[in-house]
Length: 125
Image (cartoon, rainbow, N blue to C red):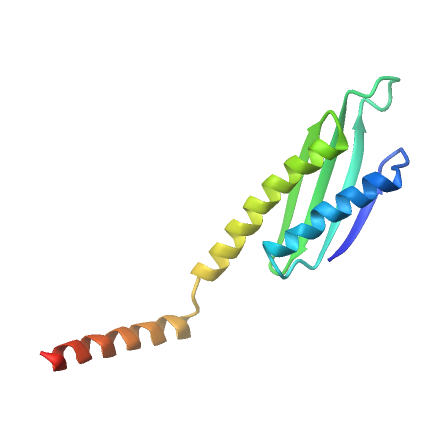
């Protein structure tokens, strides 16, 4: 997956970027067609001298949908973990929904095979 990480108004160290990249690469196990992703790292209260919380925003592009999750916590690592939990759930739900929706041709084929099974059951009697 192509991933762009943006640190807004600060410079993120390489270990944080590697951590986020490694975590988001694991999302491929939940949905195999993730096209790309963008991560925005922000500091809440950066205008003042005291940073209150760290915000992680992730936007994933998959065919037919764009997923967006925003979480905040005391550290970027814990906020990333929270984002991962939400994204896993969203990806699994989207994939299940996509698999549940059948095309008319598939529905027709299923109904034909069910009718054939019923006919076979009646012939066996």
